Length: 186
Image 1 (cartoon, rainbow, N blue to C red):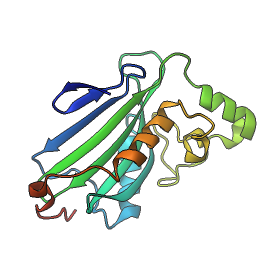
Image 2 (image 1 turned 135 degrees about the vertical axis):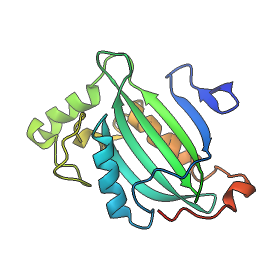
Image 3 (image 1 turned 30 degrees about the vertical axis):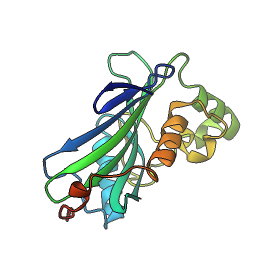
Image 4 (image 1 turned 180 degrees about the horizontal axis):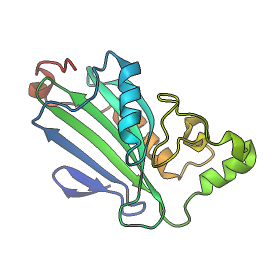
């Protein structure tokens, strides 16, 4: 990764972008972290407007509860292709810190989906969304987004995003002043 500015890094080979952002506003999470079922449902509904929520989990970043959110969105200003966004949001009562990686598709897109549609059958590719079965968003929830396929497609942007998150979350550290702030209540 090459540093772009004091909060952004870019991989020149893949175009992946990492940024760290502090928001001095009450987090806009639609439910408390302790209510994961409601949080997932509302995030899936919200994400459906522009893309698709792939998964959401509560994780711990430097002993602080955080939301790990994986989404896919259309590539901006492109006729096709997706960008996969993995965000770790550490919410506090009146602020939040966000660690995010954006991994864009490049070259031939849709290979992971096409290969898996052949392997598991097109009819099995598009199950209902696990967090909000009735939601039909701009982008579909697809079996190709399942983590079990990452090893088969290690260079796919979704696989890269998950790999980066798996490496970064256990090693990331928060400023002690931020960690000591009052917790997010929802």
